[in-house]
Each structure stands twice: as structure tokens, then as C-alpha cells.
Image 1 (cartoon, each protein chain N blue to C red):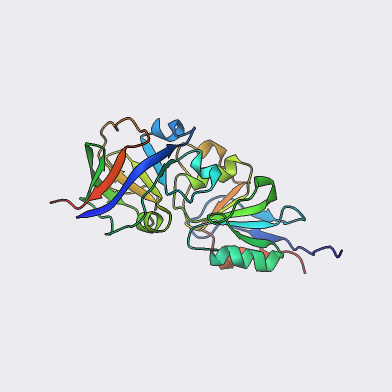
Image 2: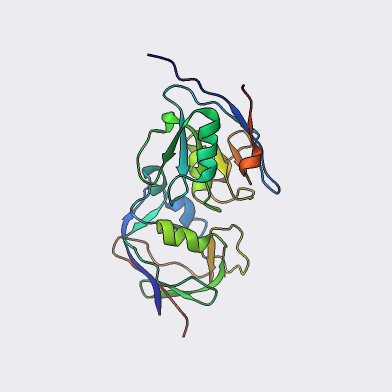
Length: 121
Length: 127
């Protein structure tokens, strides 16, 4: 089951602040400008299922297993299209908004890249 | 034109929270209680607005300048919003009890940020 799908539409000028720390900050297109500067904006609308450990996050063809889901992460995604992805291999979320995935290199982040979150088979 | 009367509140960190206390003192032209929480105005932002006479404002549905914001109320639980408002010079109240970290940590100070805040942590200073 695909739980969430979105295409990246815009890249904030300061996302390197986070990418350098292996973090991606995503927001839907209703985001205030000051947050958009640090964010990857996407066109995702509907959240079909709750994010859980074991789900797979796809960025284009690259796949990352979800290792931890903070208690606020599902609300953020559902209400704001907001997702904090940390590519750190941690199994405990450091912050309530975190979604931690495998510590693998992320693909180049650019408009048109598709984000997909799927239930593991 | 009658001058609007504002009152100050003091906001302290809640249990396991961090930072503060902050004094929130809305003034003419800078009286927005800026809720950046999603799902409308957060009850804590509304409460601060009610006590101070400030204007509750939903940052996700309208746009405002930073110079108009008396305080930003966030519930992000983490990494982005937690740093952006302190960086922009906006006093920031985080509902979740968390100690700031992340790339924008360098902007977050005890005099511009307080976390773990619930209704009980907001104290009216003026009669």
C-alpha cells in the first residue's frame, strides 16, 4: 500500500543547512515563506495510512527503511504535509517530529523528484 | 482613536522543558500571537492572546511580517520551526518539552525560546 505520495515542486534556498546534517525538511505548499526557505516543498495532499516502523521511503528510485517514527510525525504529515526525515540510522527518534531512516546517501534533491512512502511487503 | 491596552505575560518552561522565562509584551503594530501549528489557532496561542490582548493569528493561513509578531507558538516537535523563528528574532514558544538541537540550534537561546509550555506556564504580569 502506498501511504503517501508527492512530487517535489520547489527547493528552498537554505536547505543545505539541513542536508549537511543528513536531514530533509519537507512541507506541503501551504507553508509560510520563512519555513519554505529551509524546506523542500511538495504537492502531496492525502495521507492514506499511518507511518510506522518498517515502512519504506522512496526518493525517486532510492529506498530507505523507516527505523523510528516520532509521536508528532504523523500529525505533521497529515496536517501540513510536513516531514522531517533524518538519514541517521537511529531507532529512537531524537525529537517528536522525527522520522529516522537508514543512514544511506540521499539522492540529489530537485524539483520533479517523487517521494513515496509504502508499507513494507 | 482609543489606544488598545495590552498586558504582559511571563512564560516559563514546563516539566522537562527548556529555556525561558520569556516576557511577552504585545504593543501596537507588534501584537500578533503567531500560531504556526497547523489545524488553526492552537489553544495555547489563543490563551496568550486572551490574556495579553494580542491578536491570535494563524501562520499557515495568512502572512505576516516578523516585526508584527509578539510571539510565535509552535508544536513542531523538533527540527525546523524550532530554529527558524528564533533565527528571525521572534520569541518562540514550543508546546513540546524538548531541548533544542539540529542545524539551527545556534540561534536558539534561553532568552528567545521556551519549551514544554502548557496553559499553566503562562502567568499574567499586569492587572
